[in-house]
Image 1: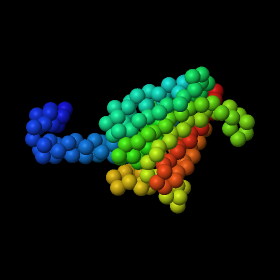
Image 2: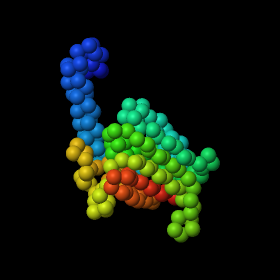
Image 3: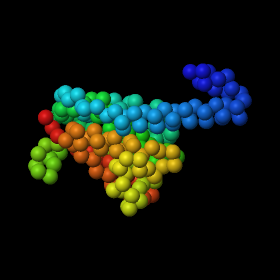
Image 4: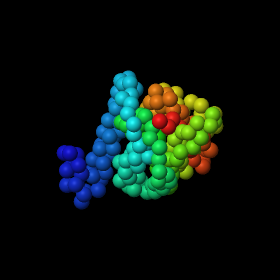
Length: 198
């Protein structure tokens, strides 16, 4: 709060304000890093209850909308109007979506579009499932690195912890779900998540 106040006071002193903004950004980054390590080491067993995954996804999108707008990123939603329930831990699923969406946004530092979709499908066994897709049009991931992106501490970013997608994968395993990542370097990445229907 004090840094924010100081930043406002220094609006007419661009160089000093820039320094304060950098400090704020670094503090936020360190807070995210610490939180990722805590999530990694203390991931609790899920508290399962019936829930609407589409609403959780929409709530997460709303949570990041201001940040997305400030980065020049447009989020396009394509979520089915009628949606089946699933059994999940609401907070953990929100964490999954947040990790994936923030990763997508970080791949587009100069702005762009992000697509978030959710629908009911039949899986490979013909069983009803919920599919969530998060697609960005950022830098993409080299083919040889695709299999590594869900490993702990692996990252292609200079300031990343390499835990976001790993934590998401662990949460989905505990929900009997799956995550598949496809990417083309220079064209973007699609993260596909499947969860069972109740």
